[in-house]
Length: 477
Ligand SMILES: Cc1cc2nc3c(=O)[nH]c(=O)nc-3n(C[C@H](O)[C@H](O)[C@H](O)COP(=O)(O)OP(=O)(O)OC[C@H]3O[C@@H](n4cnc5c(N)ncnc54)[C@H](O)[C@@H]3O)c2cc1C
Image (tube, rainbow, N blue to C red; front, top):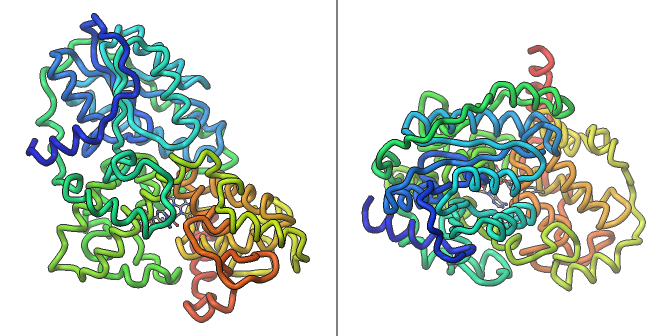
């Protein structure tokens, strides 16, 4: 590993708990939760480094909880995508001589503690999540295991705690903090095999991934899988870089200037499910895009890096420092006051959850966006803003609007249950990271969007027809 990569790896880690030095000579356990990939995974890298230093084996622990059993929110769509990715990860780790252990059940922390205790682990390395369930599970593990627990942020290019120690006001305040650290963290991808020491001699435990996938399909049948995207780390790298599969880099990045036109779907990366499921490293994606200077316009590269790094990491910052990241209480005071002043304004249309879920409103554009979400598990980024803002306009109160948008997004989006989703809904409905705009009914000072604005930007009928065509294709298959 080069010095820059080594320095970045060290700085990505922080001690979560440092219990009295353990006498155990047991393995180092990497608890793989949010970052489910072999390559370009600083948490796995740190765990391997520690195992090498101590001359003990490395074991990767995974837990298949309610969310991955299919019965959680997101159904089979999210669960099978995740499980297929974990199956591939398991095979790739074993091929490199690294053992894995999988536990199941509703108690994530309990499963990980059980693995650590059974193996008499000497240290635990976990990845990072700013969301409350992920944080609570990490805290619970750190409280119980009597060995050092090291947390590594493998999900942000610049680790969240290096960027800032407080909630950032907006992109303009976090941007300089990220950029000042990019030189240290946007380093060349490391070769994983360089890190692996002696193969581990522990008895491998077999996980029946196919049985878990079958169960998830049955339990999660209410939200079926989608077939426009292939799960797993290899498919993620191909979607980023392999020209044989119409990858995003380099050719589609040249179209990035058109990213706000839902009628130009090739202009956006559609990589968010891979980033969300930890199957693609954001640092790898950013590094590869940055290598295209001189080949692709700087403007396209800079805009992509702004979304991938600044906007995405602003979301993690918000969820890390704001305990109310998914409720109106988390909004700025100006937005809370303004929304509450307009909470009783007369709404021209009011729809219940079922009508919205089925995409049965009076607005064909909104319905198309909702059907894209419901049937395909995705929605174009520009439409997501319009979609959430109309939910504010068409539900009885801002509280119901926020809850509805989050519920629909988490239930159907393949990239849901993510800081970007909570912040996207909070930005659209509660003005988070935005400023106050001209006051109007229902929205108060929260930024407004309307059908006429969309009509000026793109051919609405083309977008509606494209969604319809893709959905009727599902029916035919
Ligand atoms: C109401 C609403 C809900 C959203 N829900 C989600 C969600 O559940 N999961 C999710 O990952 N994103 C969500 N977003 C943010 C954004 O719309 C998606 O990240 C983007 O559309 C994903 O498509 P892409 O990968 O083609 O994006 P690209 O245009 O290719 O962008 C590159 C990457 O940058 C990041 N990114 C892009 N836009 C944003 C943004 N506005 N905020 C934060 N990061 C961004 C994503 O990781 C994305 O993959 C939401 C936005 C809104 C307004």
